[in-house]
Amino acid sequence: MLRLRQIALVAHDLDPVEADLKAVFGLGTAFNDPHIDVFGLRNAVIPAGRQFIEIVSPIRDNTAGGRYLARRNGDGGYMTIFQCDDHPAVKARADDLGIRRVVDQQGKEYWILQLHPADTGGTFLEIDVQHGGDSLDGKWEPAGPNWSDNITDTLVAITAAEIQSPDPAPLADKWSRILDVPVAVSTDGAVRSLTADNATLRFVQTKDGRPEGLGGIDVTVRPADLSAVLARAEARGLAQTGDRSLLNIGGIRVRVRAA
Image (cartoon, rainbow, N blue to C red; front, side, top):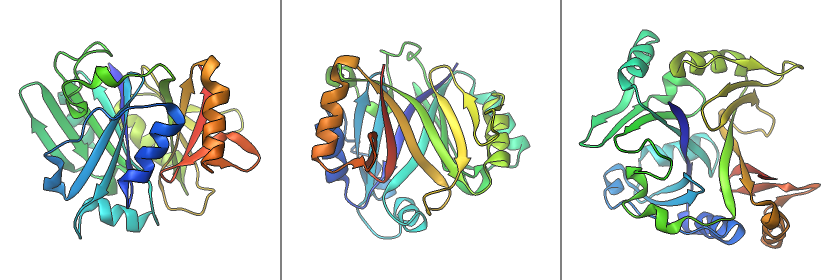
């Protein structure tokens, strides 16, 4: 199993990003982790179908989140978080590549492995195990005990994450080796991708002037809701000029399509 389970954004101010996501997609916040303050952060975890969008923001100086904001010149993508069922194999592959572990903890039901972004490149890569969470409707500890109460019908799924880099080819190759997923190359050679069980990772050339990092996600919504979603985004000034299906929320590109 290898699922894209959660996308994390980092913002100077969590509240307006949370408000945009909730207003545009009709979402509800499932959880605010009371223990994340140990990292100098506060957060909000929002169900996006049976996946999650998390927003974090610093609550004190000199945090990893704050340094990331400075490095990427503002709000933007922070983490891609996967769910797997074989931590030892992932750890062995990461060790073979000399990749350091930022967090490696085994709780009673949830095991977290966060790899060092200076070694992985791209962005923070986290690969976790949730015991009792084989079903997409099952447990996912970072979203709290009652996350399914906040599922809404409009946003169906996160179908892709896009990582930008001045040199995407070797970056895709490294992530391929970590995740044990082959690299596919587009016919024009411009995009390299890795396909997990429920989503795709795209590695593309940087073209927005920002540093390497998680630059965008693709989401699907119910066909009946697409027009209303895009209208709400446009009303909030989030749609990019010339392409109203491409939004800018929390410093990332959000491509919206009908499911």
